[in-house]
Length: 349
Image 1 (cartoon, rainbow, N blue to C red):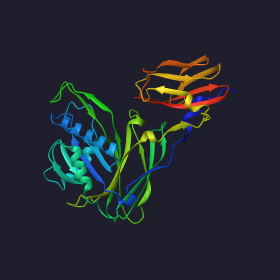
Image 2: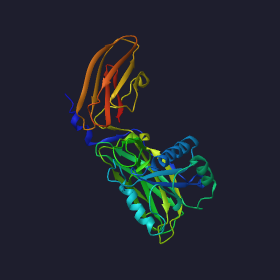
Image 3: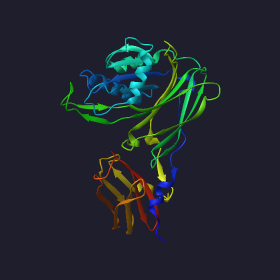
Image 4: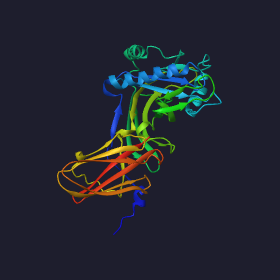
């Protein structure tokens, strides 16, 4: 019986699940750095480059540092912006009267000035400072549903007081804007860890453990997304950050439609280069015997977009694939032979 591939999107199964990210091991120090920036200011690109260096420093040295770009729409010709940034500025302005432009740094909830210079050295010194004792945050991504673009994040906070705020941020990296107007006209701007969504919970005795659900826009690529969180006071002039956990990439979470078999035969025999890609890539398939291969690519809704059948020999076969005319997002590659079925994720950026 012919299978109905359009049913693929009705349910998704988790392949890589329950990876927990925590600040709780020996209560590691935590530093939150927020850069409020705009595509309309000439000094902002340098600051964003500094933030990108800080993100790399955090990753390379496994530091518990959460660096967030809050891109504000203070320029009529902006290409990308973060509504979260405008919202948080409104909250900070009640406690930080000098907050009046971009670029501006807020470190551990305190205004530190403009620009981002010597960020690795600065982050090292900040990281060496003692963090709040006893405040611990654990985040656990439990389900990433590509079809409905939803992400569920479990959280648990220990050692906090009622009245403190837990904030979990969904961030996107790899963003590029080619500016045609304003102070940055003619420049290509790059944005990483830009906050797309933020969900906040006012903590009390009953809600220090729960689940936050994000639904992200269709143009966001899961492989470019990160999750990070922090606990903070937001009362009057007290905006102290008390603890949190660094951002982790959503590519740690992989999903497949339930209708797709997950039998993996010789899983190391196939490679997709590059992946993620721009829609143009190659598939390398090694074989130790002649066999008939059926190769299919499906969209996240189960719609077939590519199909090819061929015979293998005792060699490495390379297939050049072009799906660049299709939109950004995740696609499913299905390889069928007489030995079984293997499935793979293709990320088009």
